[in-house]
Structure formats: C-alpha cells, structure tokens
Length: 231
Ligand SMILES: N[C@@H](CCC(=O)N[C@@H](CS)C(=O)NCC(=O)O)C(=O)O
Image 1: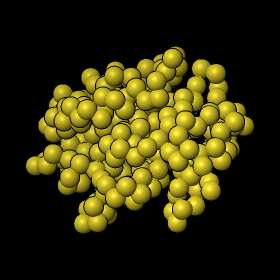
Image 2: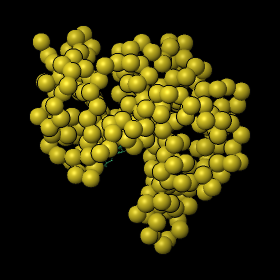
Image 3: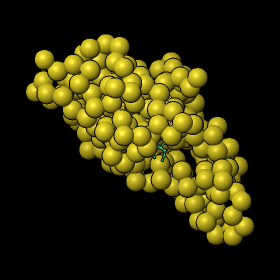
C-alpha cells in the first residue's frame, strides 16, 4: 500500500498522516491558492514549509516533487484510481483538488471557471509578480522606468478586465470557485505585499474592492494566508 512516506520528498519533510496529501509550500500568492483550497475542502493534508530563506526550493529533495524548483507542489498517496500522484503548478493542483473533492468546480460552470483560472495563471500571476518586483522589491533599483511602467500598465489593465467581468456578480464565474481561489491571493499580494493600490488605480475600480473584501471575509482565507506557518 502506498503511503505519504513514499513521497519523493519524505526524507526532508516527514509526513504526519500516512494517507494525507503532502503539501510543500510557502505562503506567497501561488502557495496560498492551494492552502486555501485544502482548507475550503477539508481534505486531509500535511503542510510542509519550503523555506526560501534556506533555499529549500532548489534542493534535490524538493526538485524531486517539482523539477521547476518553485512552490507549491503536492504528493497524494491516494491519487486517481488509488495510485499516487505528484503535482506542481498551482492551477493544475487546483483542478486536481476540485476533481478529487467534487467541490468548487460544478459541471455547469466548468469552462467559465477554467477560463478565469487560465486568466489568472497566464495574466494576473506573471504580470502582478513582475510589477511587484519593479515596484516594491529589488527591481526598484532599476533606473530605467520602462519595465516598471510596462508591468504597472498591464496589471492595471488586467484589473479593469476583472472589474468589468464582476459587474452584477459576487464571484467571477458564478458560485465561489477555484477561479476565485486563484485570483484572490494575487489581489492580496497586490495590496499587502507590493503595496501597489495607488499605482494600479485600485480606488477607481467599481467592483474589485468589494470582491476582494468578500474574499478576505472567508474564514478559510484568513487561515490559508499563514499556511504553512513561517517560523
Ligand atoms: N506558475 C507557477 C509559479 C510558481 C512560483 O512562481 N512560485 C514562486 C513563489 S509565488 C517560487 O517558488 N519562487 C521561488 C523561486 O523561484 O526560487 C505556479 O503557479 O505554481
């Protein structure tokens, strides 16, 4: 029988529950997407901190679960047809957990949810991330204004697309879904990590601020933002 101890990363991050999903992460927006889905579904899991301060994400133990050397990643000893599965890319993990749990991706919303999930994965995530680098982190030192302005303008534009799509609805694709779980942590990153509200015209948006407040009011979101806990 396969157990969590069969995870390729078990030698570095010891499982606590033999049948639980092993979740390897750090509480950045991409990590929080998955901790949130795990909290919302109630699926059993063990959370393991991949400590960026120690460079854990580039060690052989972690590369065995994600050769791309980035969080989040999971190992499920009880995957499809009872066989174990190792997965990386937060969007793929959200789709997997939705199918496994049967929650947050109802069949009649499947393609709208997929569409907005892809919008987050290919647009919001990469563009907000680059904006954060040039606006708030090391990229601030770059004197050329072009890269900062390029990503600021694209982040602002993406927010207006989201704002328009939210007109008349509480969540982006019908009921609260994995698409909201993908987008919400990046809005949190923009507001609280990158402190980018003014730069991207947050206060001029009609629907996004209330959407973000609805998201933040969910108890699972409050928990997920600190999973795994950083010592
Ligand atoms: N497309 C990937 C992106 C993952 C990603 O960029 N993870 C970042 C944290 S948000 C990371 O692990 N950075 C550490 C590094 O690059 O060394 C996903 O959605 O899972």
